[in-house]
Image (cartoon, rainbow, N blue to C red; front, side, top):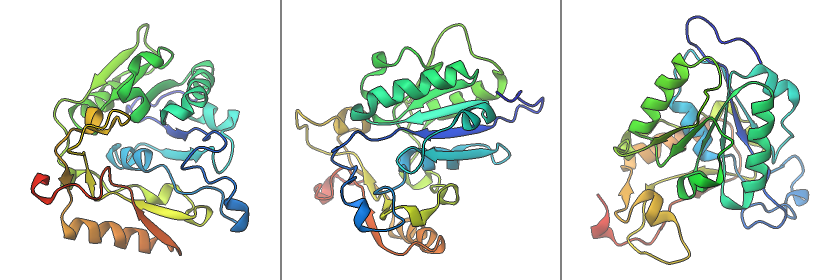
Length: 246
């Protein structure tokens, strides 16, 4: 692992684990029909987290659905930040353990850890919930913590970042031509409480929506990458009742 600089900058590797075969959003069997495309869409949560990082921190993103994460990737990083869903649990754990062995600080966020933080005792720090006060506290901790701590730290969001103020995804970190589609999130949260779904638990039952101007900014940002293809809205519930929206 590279030594953290005295200025408290951190080299951050954003790592997205491989989706298991036949997982709903993997579309592995479809990709061979589209030469040059390796995955359905880039990891939006990690790209958004990247937008919240200090501008002077070097950042790289490796999506294992596009290429494997190498030992050289891990050796470069001071911090390895991982995100994923429950179907990726084994791959998440494997990535965290590899990063730990490389001497990096490991941070885990996203829907799986937010729903079940007890699944991941291996990570040095857990980010539970949406971007918000936990994100601010986590980044401050990373800036002053040059080596792995003796005990796991858990940062849990209480005050969410208003959806209009969430950073734009750092699309420059990915090669858009390797993906079939690009994601855009208009709203988060769902007013219903279906027993099979973790959305109300993690993101709340009051949907929060972005303004048309903000959506247009994100569409423009996707257009500016040179992406040719579909854009998919990845909202928690596209048919939420209008009067439930902020």
